[in-house]
Structure formats: structure tokens, C-alpha cells
Length: 184
Image 1 (tube, rainbow, N blue to C red):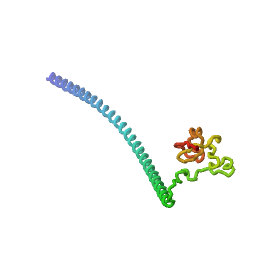
Image 2 (cartoon, helix red, strand yellow; image 1 turned 120 degrees about the vertical axis):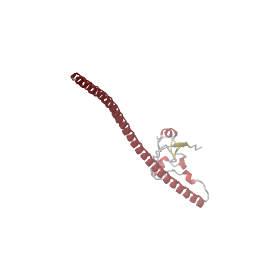
Image 3 (cartoon, one colour; image 1 turned 180 degrees about the vertical axis):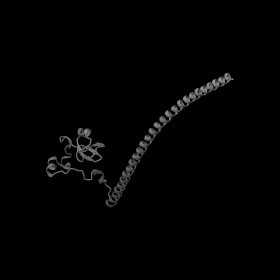
Image 4 (cartoon, helix red, strand yellow; image 1 turned 90 degrees about the vertical axis):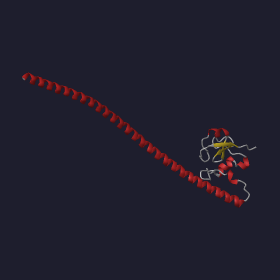
């Protein structure tokens, strides 16, 4: 009987040790899987954070572009109103004058605000276009002013100076084109 008891006790101990081995193996595999899942969760959190940051920056950029578009719409509205005012004034002048000689086409876009005043001595020194035909170049002071700068429509530079000019020397308006005037 003692022998049977010892055998049953050894079998029970063997079973317990076998169960402990199975449990530790299962725990090790579960821990390994949990660690892999935790790493995946951290990686997904990092990606989520990066995507949220990108979304915030895109939202701010979209807001900036929306503000720029609204500003451009406001500027376009002001320009449209100015254009309409000018067209209305032109219609009134054209209707009142009746001759429609296009006299306003020869005016500068500066409307006198940015024009440099010419003193009587300089005017006598340079000569008026009516007496001499052409004034001197305001760029170099040597050549004849034969180039009309656009959009300000000042006839104030010679051909070499017009090629290198970025702005009108008379009013400072940015040059976006030029026309060579033939006085003959």
C-alpha cells in the first residue's frame, strides 16, 4: 500500500510539474503576444499623433488660404467699384463733351499724386515738348526721352534706360511695359 501511495504522490507531483510547465509556456507566449500588441499600439499612437499634427497644419493652411481669398475678393470688389466709378465718370464726360476726342487716354495713371513737380528753371533748361519736340531722359539725363513707360504713361526715358528700368523715374510706378514713340 505504501508503494501505491508513493506512486500516486509521484504521479501527482509529475502532473503538477507538467501543469506548471504548460502554464509557464502559455504565459510566456501570452506575454510575447501582449508585448507585440503593446508595441503595435504605441506605433499606431505615434502615427495617429503625426496625422493629427498634419491635420492641424492643413487646417491652419486652409484657414490662411481662405483669408487670402477673402482679402483678394475684397480687393477685387474695390477695384470693380473703382472701375465702375471711372466708367461712369467717363460716360458723363463723354456725354457732356460730346466730341469724344479721347483726351483722357493721354493722361498718366498717376493722377498727379506721384508726379515730381518741375520748377520753372528746370522747365526753361530742359525745354517744353512743344518747343523742343522731346525732353531729356530722366534716367541718364543725356538722351532724348522717346519711350513711354506703362502703366503710368510717362514719356521720360531714352531707349537704353527703358531697357534697364524697373520703375518709372518720374513717379516710381513699377514698369510693366514700354512703348517707343516715333516723333517724325
